[in-house]
Amino acid sequence: MICAPAPQGRMRDRMIMPDPTAVNPPANTKVYIHEFIDIIGHNRSRYMHHMTANWSPTAQEQRNQLCYGVWGVLGSTGPWPQVVNIWEEDGWDGLAASFELET
Image (cartoon, rainbow, N blue to C red; front, side, top):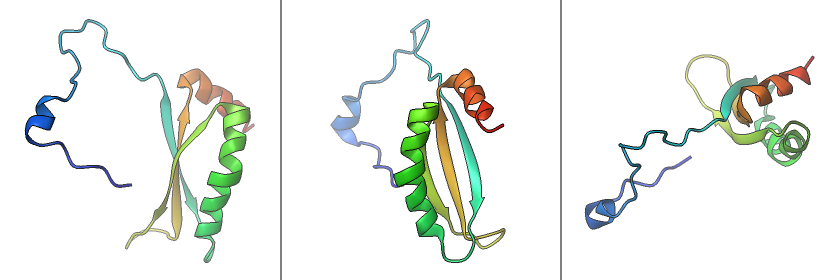
């Protein structure tokens, strides 16, 4: 994932910044979890496609769970090939409901 560089000069001055004096700034109530998946052989691209094309729509429908991202891991230590999935859950209650389906 590539992020854009921070704006410079006048553009930066025009950015909308949160009000530091706000009593109750909005909070993100989502919960994010990750899972490491060890891949067997040369199947990383197949797994990543399956997660994004097949499982993610099912998870959204059945669990209200958003697949926030799927990344391939390339490391010099530890097991590989490996994939990291990051899921967005609808708060702690959403996470509990999702885990309930696992049992």
